[in-house]
Length: 300
Image (cartoon, rainbow, N blue to C red; front, side, top):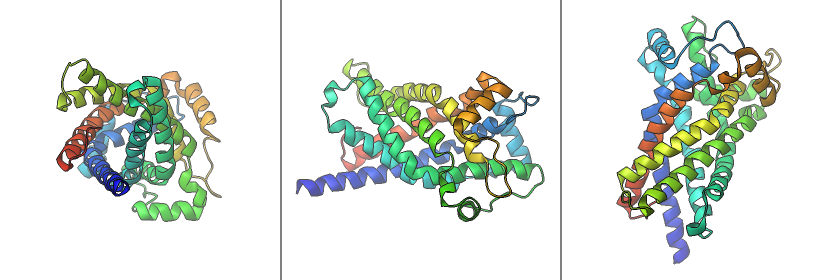
């Protein structure tokens, strides 16, 4: 009987995390595509450094229309149907399997990192397609044909030209980023929310969730931005018989980026990343906690 109840709770959590992630992803996706284009801007071109998020977003709207801000939304949602339930439910399961009252922030960060690694490995192909489709908008704005007509066309062409392993291109910088993001996001949200509740700053309500998501967004962005830049550039490059890779591996990408564009290029897209992580986490956590309350599950 108890096993059946636990399975039902797990299924509810998976459904709620997926639903909350879809709402958050759709709401903040324009910021994500702006961040991706900004990170690719001036790629290994020392003479092309000056730009900002507002200029990039304006160029997208001018050249591609408002719908250009949602280029790659479908694979992004598909990714979160795998990524978010695995990391959120996995983190909560691992956390609750030990004495969570005695868990320190570093231990929570370790659990968050482990959950992030597993989730990202599973969701990496969808993430790859999302990045490629977001980057395709630059080709359209230059009057060129995009590489892919849709997510399934992208999957088919990637497998055909780069092999099945091509779907996991950039998986190592992707995993590195996932470790850092989830160490900052999950651990800081959990710890910050518990802190304000235990110190009676506020109750377990929207104010606690807002404070927790704000702190986790800052920590996750600061830790993960360099890995995010490397991941985006690694995943964007196509390889094959006719394509020449710009970077041999994530380390080569890191070195070339710093050498050509300077060390601060590793934090390209910091503010749009933060601007997205903050609202994304706010929408996600508030929705998720509210949905849990509606269906009778305890707070995260």
